[in-house]
Image: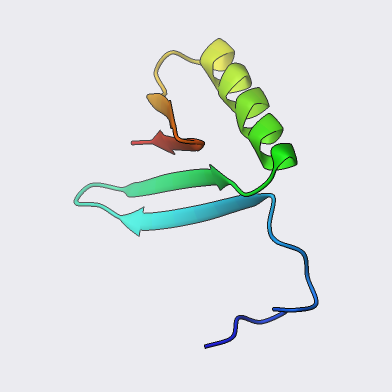
Amino acid sequence: MAQPGEGWLPAPDLRLTLEVMDQGRLVSLAAGSDQGERILAALQDSLSKASKLISDQLESGVIQWK
């Protein structure tokens, strides 16, 4: 099944996935390009400086906050 914009739009720099958990939501960001990887690295750096209360992981280009 074709996605809206397929063939017209470039691949996304970032892919965001939201999952419903027992308590709250799980947000995952995945890089889809070199620019996306730079965005994730900058975001992880900013978040780690802003608050140690946020649990973050960087595995295979994916950051997850639980």
